[in-house]
Length: 552
Ligand SMILES: Cc1cc2nc3c(=O)[nH]c(=O)nc-3n(C[C@H](O)[C@H](O)[C@H](O)COP(=O)(O)OP(=O)(O)OC[C@H]3O[C@@H](n4cnc5c(N)ncnc54)[C@H](O)[C@@H]3O)c2cc1C
Image 1 (cartoon, rainbow, N blue to C red):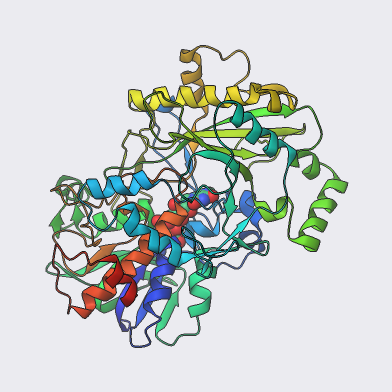
Image 2: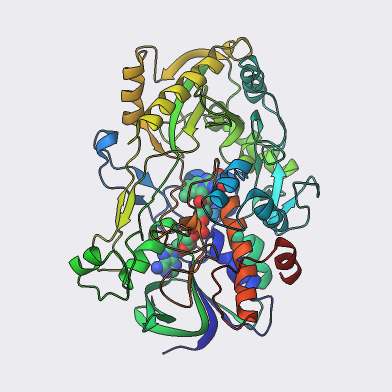
């Protein structure tokens, strides 16, 4: 038996570090943060180019595989997930994107009061430390550091101009008044180093006596007294330890493992739990349902000029140049990770806001994070922003150390299939545009032989891969099938919340790290407010934004 805390946070990822860092700002609040992975002590975590290494790391990455997906020609899709302090924010592609105003207004329309765009914007701003400074849409002194990509690249400039020929405006801010446009990403970096949520929220908090951070400590069950969560059982150093909490258990283990842990703990679909002999605490059929992800298709091009990162990485002189750029100016490929160029545009005629996103890299490889090709190459990755296909996370075993079944169910709807084909065609149109065409020696993938819509869809099924945004598996809502309510409390039990990528009703239109950080910032304010109220659980208790910010 271990100590008693006020809050036990399970998972030190994008959300968990925010929760632990913020809650422990109050010296009277005792917080235990449990992380299954080791501390983030690797240069490859902190140096942006290390993305290619941690993508395959046994130590810092769960390296999940989906179940064979019938829609993807029976392939298993590789799902990397961070397993260290910072979680996936410690191994991600560093891209800072929030999504669209309409994403959050849609959540509010679904009944999630307090989650409309105007409600969530203050929490994005509170988290953000953008090097451009504070403005109407941006924070300048928040803990999550956001930087411009240092320097410009002729391929990205040509891409932006090429998108312009299709009517897509150039933009220097995808996170401002509107998302639509083409330009350069901003990254969660600071002076050339990655800014994970461990860097942003945990490191400043590590000396606090009221915060205990346990690494290589994997939670195996939430402990209940009746329907009230009272602690967590975890395994550390081969020992099973039970930690207790007076206030709440906060699950932040990510969209794969938060639902898995709920199911292991007896909260989930009764038939599934019975199949594995797990005693039922509370029947909640929707735990693990509503899985969504962004599926990317990567078009690879051979470049007419030796100006790509492939050329730098493939020569000794080029590697020295990259090292020098980083050392002298914290610039160049080492400071960038992979993707530099972006475009949010409408591919389907009925869409009123961007429905696809481009990630443009000045390098090419057979897979994300793989070894670069021997020739000069660049990549257009395209993905649909609001997939309508839904998958599922379900126990495959009662063993908490075994991964659950991950049924991605990509391209399951006609809308998603149409959008996939339209996305690849949009990428080809930009490649064929006058500004871009001079750099295209040949399209290597899909290649000229893949021409008809049927062939394109077939190719998408062959090569489609995650762009690493599984989410939605503990859906927030007010209907009978929601897993958490709009204050992120697990419905039907007490003193238990989920705060991570699992709670989104629909995946935001873009990369998911910034939205998860926003969710956790907002959650902290709700947790504090509920505690002040003495743990009362008013269902209508979404306070005004003004009040939350004052109390936060
Ligand atoms: C390779 C990759 C690239 C990506 N690129 C980008 C990008 O460029 N931009 C962007 O915005 N988003 C990106 N994402 C997505 C984004 O990083 C995630 O959506 C986000 O980090 C999810 O946050 P989370 O808190 O839900 O989960 P995570 O950050 O994954 O955190 C979950 C944590 O819980 C721990 N954990 C799990 N189970 C247990 C347990 N039982 N006990 C204790 N600890 C446990 C895990 O080890 C992990 O540390 C990327 C993700 C990956 C994997």
